[in-house]
Amino acid sequence: MITLADLAALSAQYGDAWSAPVEPVVIDSPAGEVVIGDGPVTLMGCVNLSRDSTYRESVATSPDDAVRMGRIQAAQGAAIIDLGAESSNAQAARVSPEDQVKALVPVVEQLAAEAVVSVETYEPTVVAACLDAGARILNMTGREHEDAMLTLAAEYDAAVVICFGETANVREASDVPPDADPMPVLLEHFGARIERARELGATRVVVDPGMGFHYGNLVDPLTRSRHQTRVLSQTFRLRPLGVPVCNVLPHTYDIFGDEFRKAEGFYAVFAALGGTHLLRVHEVPHLRVVLSALRALEVR
Image (cartoon, rainbow, N blue to C red; front, side, top):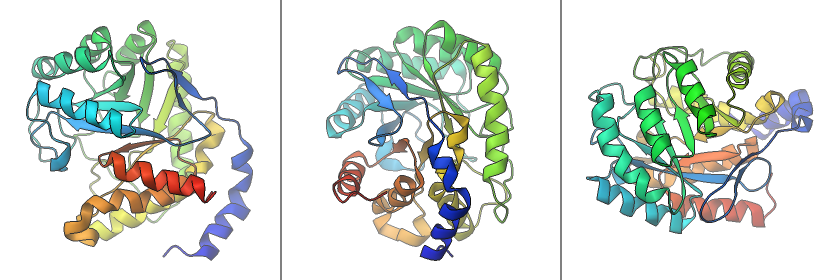
């Protein structure tokens, strides 16, 4: 259960974290600078070229369709368009690096002239091809080739989203302790990886606690949702890392049913209150108005 008393206790116990400075990540774009940091929450829309992606509304049926969807999301308020060619769903088919490049590069080449493009992958060959095509952000979803991917990001002066995880890639399920305080684990985990990224020359780093990935001990929908909400509500405790935080918003079909497309707006309130800087979302226009309302009402 999350109560006002719980939130007050969190603020009383960990409120000093709010004073930790966060260095913004600034990315040049055809439409002007995109700033990820303190200030208005930045929206990252996502377009999936994998037919296995569970959020059907985000699935593009072809590269041309992905370009169309990316343009729409940018017009709706997404500052960044995140592209992926393989679903992180545990049951989804694997997509070879060659097929990922074939699907992604034509989309990157067209969208990069109009918006900041991010590419979600854990394969260095896909990273190299997409950064060469004009992508400005690497959304890194695996550890196996981490040094190689960070080196490529540095070479292309790209920003990096480092996603939580200890496995070779997010397709290999791991566990999280849902009943324990997850924040010390996240601080330790990301601290070492940020340091390594900087050693390799990748200096523009955002961290992602991994709320959108599959975990073996979070298969019960309500248990998973409670854990996700706890992390969203206290993202501010990651501020001592000195870098912005990205969060993926849940959908929780078992709670929202046929109104699941409203779920992201619901969870965005917890994320905004908790201090998230960047939100990766499917429902861009809905999130734009929710975040605008929170700003207008000065909710923090």
